[in-house]
Amino acid sequence: MIVELWLAIGIALMLEGLGPLLFPEKWRKMMSELSSQPSNLLRRIGGCLVAAGFAIAYMMWSSK
Image (cartoon, rainbow, N blue to C red; front, side, top):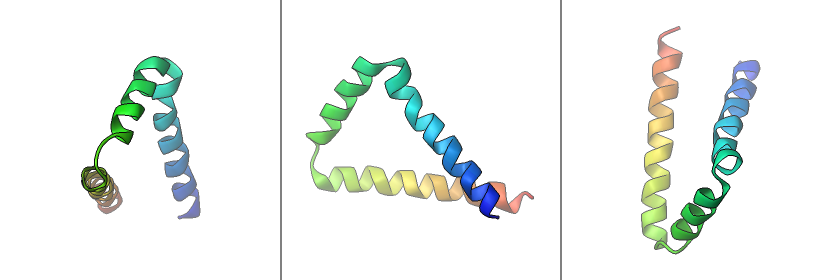
């Protein structure tokens, strides 16, 4: 199980790094626009991302 966890972290880091690697100017603009948003909106976005990640992980885990 620990191997799968590290694999998932590695894949997440690779995906997160694609934005600044391939499109640094667009990524910088997106980050500046996100930082100007109200905290409640950022919490909602974060919650949706966590829920989507949990749902995907659950579907993958239960299909084993």
